[in-house]
Each structure stands twice: as C-alpha cells, then as structure tokens.
Image 1 (cartoon, protein in one colour):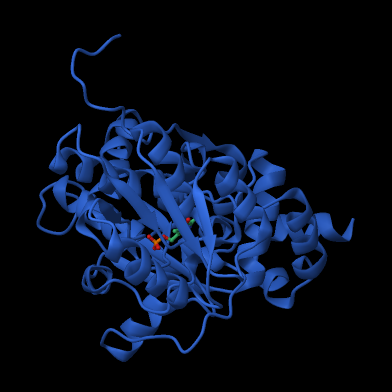
Image 2: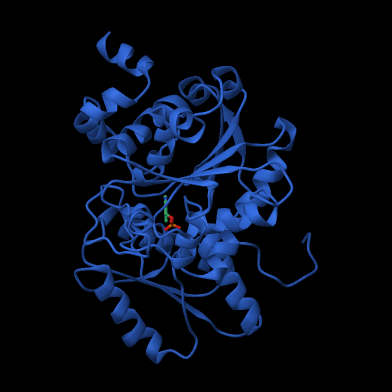
Length: 359
Ligand SMILES: *Cc1c(COP(=O)(O)O)cnc(C)c1O
C-alpha cells in the first residue's frame, strides 16, 4: 500500500471548505462552510474521539488489545463506533433508555456492542465506568468533550481552515456550536497555535460560540462569572445538551476575541430547514444554530457592529457545519410545521424569507 508504516489510518478526513452563495447573500458577507458533516461518523466528533482513540492505541503499542467504551447515544458514540472499525478495535456504547431508536439503530449498524442502561446519561455512564471498565484491564474510556486529546483532534480543523482560506485572503471570524465546549476549545487552541489570537502576530480572528436557549451552559457560566451548571436541558438540540462545559472551554470563552450567543430552538431548527433547501445538506438542530447566524443578522450586529456595510461585505466568515446524525427528512418537515411562523424567527431571519413566506 502507499505507506510503509503499520499505523492505522486516521479515523477522520480532511473536509472540504466551500463558499456558499446562498448564505453569503443572506448574511451580507462571504460565508464559507467547513463541511464536518462529511466526516465518516457524520460529525466533527470523528476528529475529537478519533484522535483520543488513535493516541490511546499509540500509547499502548500497536499489538496491545484495547476495548473502547463510550457512554453517548449521540454523535460521540457514533464517532467512537465508526473509529473503532478503522482502528480495528472493539467498542461498547452504553446509552440511557431515552436514546432515540434512530441513533440506536445507527450504532448497531456500525457493529458496536450497544447496551441500554438507566434513565439518564449519568446512570448509563456510572454503570459503564463501574461495571464494565472497572472489570476490564484493557478498557479505555472515551470522553466526548473534556479531554486534551479531544481538543487536539478538533484543533486539526483549524489547521485545514488556515490552508483552505489562504487563497481567499484569510478569514475574519469563525462560528461554531457549543455543547460541552470540546469543539470550541479545540478551535481556540488551533487559532492560538496559528497566531490568530491577540498578540499572536497574524491577522486576528473573531470567534462566535453559539448555543440554544435551554442548552446554554457556556453563556450561563460567563454570566455568573464562574463555571456553572444548568438545572436541566430543555432544548431540542440534544447534541448541545451538556449541563456544564469543560473548564478549559470556559477559560477560552473569557477572551475578548470570543462572543457568546444564544439563539432559540426555533432559529436552530429553521437554520437546519433553510440550509437543507439552500445547500441540499441535512444537519441537526445543534448545527442549525450556527447556520442561523447567517440567516439572522447577528454577524452584522453582534460580531461586526463597528464596520461599514461596504467593509462588512468583504469579510470572510467560516461557519463550522458540525453536522450530526440525529436528523431525518421527517424531523425537518416537523420543524418546519412547528417553527416556520415562530415570532422570533419571523422577526430575526432575513427579509427574503419573510417575502417568500407570504407569496
Ligand atoms: C457534540 C456536538 C456538538 C457540541 O460539541 P461540544 O464539543 O460538546 O461542544 C455540536 N454539534 C454536533 C453535531 C455535535 O455532535
């Protein structure tokens, strides 16, 4: 084969970055899409847990038996099961009984050993740690967002963006969704590494960290001035449903390059619906919330309030299309019925939408 080393292939790919004419017209500046939905597992989690799993194998040596354990019925579980195939190691995914049949069936299709235990994630996680990993000397725990190897994996996205945006004269901002903050922390570490934060020497890049109302654990911590926990997750964007962010994400978020934004479930859902129409790409509401930044006017009014319209139109903004597998055409149709006429969507989304709704 092409390589003479025995290292297994990386469980993630370099994704394309494209300029979106439709979203650029909506936003009034140049919108570029970093297409993480194309990762083998359907989301950027292939980078996050893929890097953690690759490093675990490298640390133990290639012939050492490792068994991976992940307690996520979401995209982290899918990424673990998908990476386990390419790394040729077994994976057990323990999920609570509330996990959607759609995700369970996707996990089973990947050949993972799926166990349903407990009513909440914490019960599934405790069972996995105590009953499974506790008794398996080859067991490796795969955390979804709070680990340095996860941040390093997510940071590879910035390495690619740096190269891909070169021909466009660089980029001015990057927009990403925040759940537990693993993606965000990885992006910040990547930007820092490439000298894009203050004092780094190169052109500075602003970061918009977006959450849905009801999954706004980062915004809550910023508001309280200390790491804080949401009482419950009430948003439809379940992939953003970490009640508390990683401390590292909170620390990065205090920097002045970062703007934290909360959008409604309606905006997140309609972001995904309009994106499917505009780009023919289907993503979760957890991703739709980042896309909503192009459909409402926050890039202009919140991120770049001090530039002229002329200057704004020349700016390059990269939206991380984080992807997600917990979505079907049927769900998009239901979002449309429930949220298309939502008052805040109608008020905040671009007027072109309003015009077309009333035709
Ligand atoms: C996990 C996930 C997020 C949130 O990522 P964090 O690293 O937890 O902040 C956002 N969108 C999708 C599709 C995800 O799978």
